[in-house]
Amino acid sequence: MSRREELVASLAAVRGRLADACAAAGRRPDEVTLVAVTKTRPVEDVALLAELGVRDVAESKDQEAAPKAAALPGLTWHFVGRLQRNKARSVAAYASVVHSVDRAPLVDALADGAARAGRDLDVLLQVSLDGDPERGGVLPADLLPLAERVASAGPLRLRGVMAVAPQGADPGASFAELQALAERLRAEHPSASWVSAGMSGDLEAAVAHGSTHVRVGTALLGQRPPLSR
Ligand SMILES: *Cc1c(COP(=O)(O)O)cnc(C)c1O
Image 1 (spheres, rainbow, N blue to C red):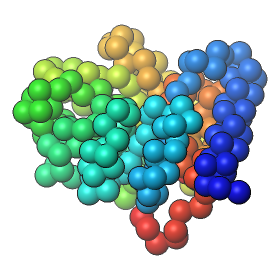
Image 2 (cartoon, protein in one colour):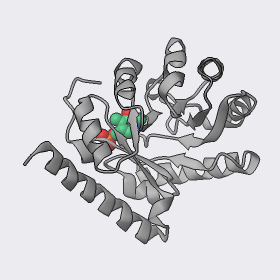
Image 3 (cartoon, helix red, strand yellow):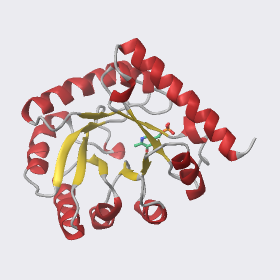
């Protein structure tokens, strides 16, 4: 099988899972955007996915994302990894959406980067559902103050929340907690209607709890090399 044929098959399988999950949840398939996570994959894979109709792609490291985005500028680039403040200006120049905003200095750096690039940037606040600082994310108690900061930063648009389900926990319970936080945020910030939740292993649970953006890597592209993160 050629790489293209492999991707045709895996994309159909993921789209099928999403359609089933939406049907089970009584949601329309067009309510959920598939974001292909292409970290560690060659840019040729990204180009093939684009040919097959994928428009939204995500990366987690600036040094890898920047050249890929430069090679394929017609796609919508999402940034989903832990982001250092000194990389914010670079990311703001090519990303349309940053999913991993979790602290005030990063908000300020992204706002500055977006202003310099003359672009608007969609921002999701990454929420920590288990308090593990290694994985990043703002604690639920600090979500609304951070949202205020984004909402008052000129070129940033507050679009919603993102989370990774804690390992070992029931993803349904985790995504239910995220959904409740998303609703509280949206009550104060109507633009914050996106919920970035669900990956290869748990997208069904995320769709059941209101996910609008699933971030899928391995189910589309196969196992990543083990030490590449
Ligand atoms: C790598 C990654 C994904 C994709 O995970 P898979 O299990 O490969 O689908 C999603 N979200 C984030 C933040 C990631 O770093």
